[in-house]
Structure formats: C-alpha cells, structure tokens
Length: 442
Length: 179
Image 1 (cartoon, chains in turn orange, red):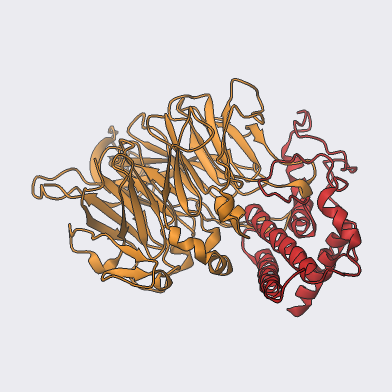
Image 2 (cartoon, each protein chain N blue to C red):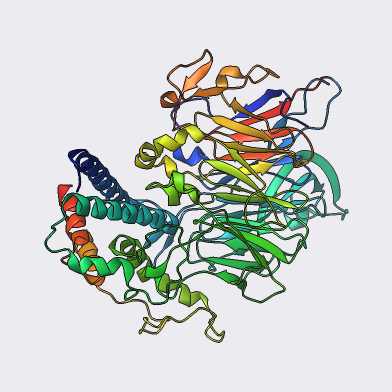
C-alpha cells in the first residue's frame, strides 16, 4: 500500500451547523479488532458505536457503510467533595476488548473512572408468560386456567449497553490512557504520575506499576502523557513523558517498574531552542505498530517512528506541520500549542496518519517516504469523491490551490483519527463531526 | 561593551519575555476556573515557559543594565543546590536552574490536593511511595495550610525560594500588577 492511493469520501456523521455544542465535541475514536464496529466518545460522556453493514452486492464500488449501532451515556459529571473539584464526564479513551463471544466489550474512561461496557444484541424475546400479560401487567390469578411454556419469538433488534465493571478511586490525577493487555485479562490505566494494572474481573483494587511522583511536588519536572501495552508481549509496556522520552518497562523485572528497561529519547536540536521547546517536545501519543517491532510517537510538530531495538534516535521522523515552528508564540497565546494530537498505524504498518489544523490530516507513507495532506470538509462530500491533496504555502509567493499559513483555521483541528485494522478505511474526527474515508476501489 | 544595537535587541527580548510571562500568568489564573480542576501537565508546561521567559528576562536585563542594585543574592539561585539537593541533573538546557517561583505555584496548588490519594491506599498495605525528607506531616493527614489569596500565594512562593528581594519576584509582581 502506498500513499499514491487515492482516498475517497464515504460518510460524515454529526451535526451540520457551525454552532458546536460543547457536549458534542468528539474526544476519542476507536475501531474494534475486526473493524466492524467504530466507537466514538464525546465531551458529554456519551459513546456512539457505528456498525459496518454487511457487504451488499448492489454497490461493489463502495465499501459497506457505517450506521449507528448503539448510543449510550457512559460517564456522568461527578463532584469530588473532598477536593471541591468537578470531575468531567468527557470520554478520554475507548479501548475494545478482543471479541470472545457474541457480545462486544469495551473499556471507556474519563478523568477518574474506567468502565467496562457490554454491548449485546437482543433479537428475541420470551412470550407467553403464565402470570403476566404481554405488556407486563400481572394477570388476575383467578383467570388462569391452563399452564403453558413461554417461547422465544423474534423481535426487532435491540442493542443494549450495560456497565459490567466500574474501576474507580485509583487515580489521583487525570487519566490519559488505558490499554488492554494481550493476555486479555489485564489492562493498564495511566494518569499524570502513575500507572495502575487492573484485572478485568477485579474492581476493588489495582496494582501500581509506575509511580513518578516526586517526594516533593516542587521537584516535579515530568509527567506521563500516554501509555500502551505491547501488542503481543504481555509483560511489556511503554509510557511517554512530557519531556519527550518514552520508557519501556518489563513487568517481570520488578513489581514497581520505576526503573525502565529502555528509554527512547532523541537529544534536542540546539538550533531550535525557544521558549516553547519543552512544550513542543512533549509527547501527546504513543502507539505500537501491529507487529510490535516499532513504536510511533507524536509531539507537537512531528511524528517519529522508533525501532524498539534502538533507543538513541528514531528510525524515521516526519514533519507534520513544520510551518508552525515560526508561529509558536501565537499558538501559545491561543492555547493551540497545548493540543494533543493522536496518531495511528495502517493495518499493515506501512502508512501512518495524524491530524493537524484547518481540518487537515496527514498520511505518511513509510515505504516511499512520501506524504500527503488531505482535508476533512463538508465541501467535498459527494459519495466516493476523491480527496485532493492540500498544500500549505510558507513563502511569500503562494501557488494556486495553496493555502497560506495565516489563513489556516486553528479552531478546526483533527486530534483523533483511527485506521481500520484490516482495510483501508479511516475515521477522522473534526471537532464535532466524524468523517469516514476509504481508498478508491478500482 | 554592549553597542546600541545590542541594547535594542536586549530590549526586544526583554519585552518579549515579559509579555510571555504575563500571558503565562493569565493562563495559570484561568486554568483554576476550568472544569475538572487544575491540569497537572498543562500547569507544568506553563511553569516551564515562565521559567524560560524569566531567565531570558534576567539575562537580558543584566546585559542591558550591568550595575543592577539588589540582584547579587539572586545569582546563587541558578547554580547552587540549596533548594533541591536531590534533584538529578538531566535537563537538556545549558542553564538549568532549580524549580523556582514560577514552577512552585502550580505544584504548591497541587500539593494540597495530592494528599487525597493517600486515602486510596489500604492502611494495611505498605506504601511504596518514596518518603520525602522535607515532608514532616504524616501522609494520611490532609494538608492544613491556610488558603492564601492568589497574589499572596505567588509572593509566598517567591519568598520560599529564599530571595524575596530578587529581581525575579519583583518582576513577576510587577507583571501581575500590570494586569
């Protein structure tokens, strides 16, 4: 697969109007392991799951569409009375569990509490109760003259989401990551200073496996920004920091993994030193490749691919929007410099994707070294219309079809993207809309 | 001997540093009011920017005014380990002052709330957290520090750094009053 592939618009979900309700702001996007389900979480604490319809023979040109499968309120706003702090209901992360039976399970988390949700289908219901009417009212016992066995009859499909576990009271600071282990029994949750290991069946205690809280908080220099389990080594996980380092830890080495096994860090280029060097080197996302050989980190301006066998420097570095380097002061003033962009791998790890501003997102082809900038916009939503590459001009002379850096809309940011694990289908979240694109089928 | 051009550049850098300091302080104030409470990561990044800006302001002020009056006490702040003896030196910057007034504010804020996590530990379980030499109060008691007004807190943080008369605290207070 190379980036010469053409990407086409497939669907867009969400409100059309420009006035964005804060609760509708999408905060996370995640495909499940088969790619059949696509979950989004929003600032209002809701989760919407889309399901890909079975392939229909009518339209071989198109991929099957994603339609709403289930919508539920995952988290509610809470109040910490001890600290007099409100706990936001915003869904920070969703992670699917590998499917083991007909039901689907996912973990969702806000700043403080993780929940395990079971999403199951019901398409039959029992009918013919002896004591109850069909509407649920109890019958007059004296009217019952015969007994019968209730039978299951088909009914309209109902998708139910029920919370099966609630994992709470384990994080003092704000949870930024959850990651399911390859053993399918445990998962980790990470906040700014600590990482906890949970068993999916046990909610009343967890194991603390990383603690970087200094004895004196005035000595604080670094926080944890993201964490993930290795995709096939159940003893290995990584966590990234605000200082631009990624530490790989092995749980077999010690109960408390404060001593990292490896540390991946690239020395800062002294030519680029500025007031904001620390902010832009803070890693906002870390993701293992599907093979587990590589890992990708996203900082404010770049994406770096690391070989787990080499700690000293990344094997590949891609500039996402280098033209912003000279604008850091403005981006600091308007708070954009604090935006946390995520990144993702394609199913075969040959292409990586990440978001930018002006509703641009970037596809970076590792094989050819080529990259392309595409835009998620309602101006181009004809079914299967091909996306045209976008260019940002940095010099004074702007070519046709280029947009100037100062014309970029910094309120339109793509922070969350996801790639179907097995197919060239991508989900790109703008502030409150979800775009689905697929590669052009010939 | 600094030339007039150098003085101009210093002035620009000085102004820029002060502006960034002012912006940073206003962001710190604003972050108190946001839902979900103070974000530790954001507060840390803000404090790092403030520290950089303050250092630049210092060095550019020193360059343009070589006979600064009250500043001698402030020099040791940058190089001695009197403030944090345990700090490991791992920062990439060539000048690496210890965490100062700028960083103390958000951490001071958080320190009050951080003791809440002790309640999550079961009493029977041995805490695996490192005990600080400086923390005298038992971990399981909430901090009983009196709540200061925001301006007072900042000044208190400056004073804790040991140099209340330093240019640092003076400049931060001046910046705040400019608001």
